[in-house]
Image 1 (tube, rainbow, N blue to C red):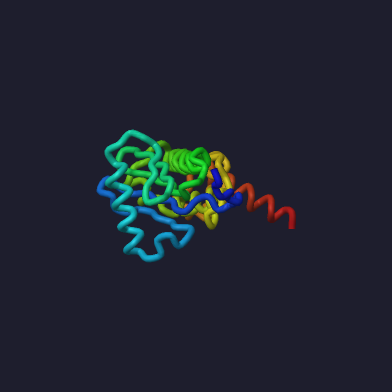
Image 2: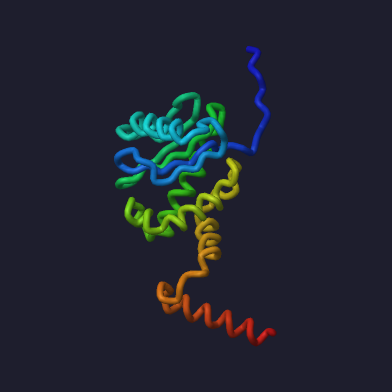
Length: 177
């Protein structure tokens, strides 16, 4: 029973993927060089998709990696870690990503809505995972931080409440000068 003791590491996530119904990449972020070329990444994504798109489970061990996944309408969400990684931590990242997107897209998590809001997806993933290190697992915090970063929305795309809030802020700052 001489098993090597693995040192704890903050680098828990190897990749975050979102694929469509056909297994085509909509979003992919790899945090290490397990698959250094785009060709290898796409082959890995096709392999994952063929193994998981017809099953109802939430976890798979594939090519020496732990893969947790979830499907919704026409999207497949994947969070990938090493084979010795804690599945619950990976699942927390997956649930945080899905719940954050669900709130940002007003419960309309499907391909078209996601493609129209890719900048929100990029910001959300950056808030959840940075360089493979899990930063946040609370979807409320992620949505709040993404909303703070997205304050530069053009005036024509803002709601009346957002315009009034922006005007209040500008008046407050001009009075404080």
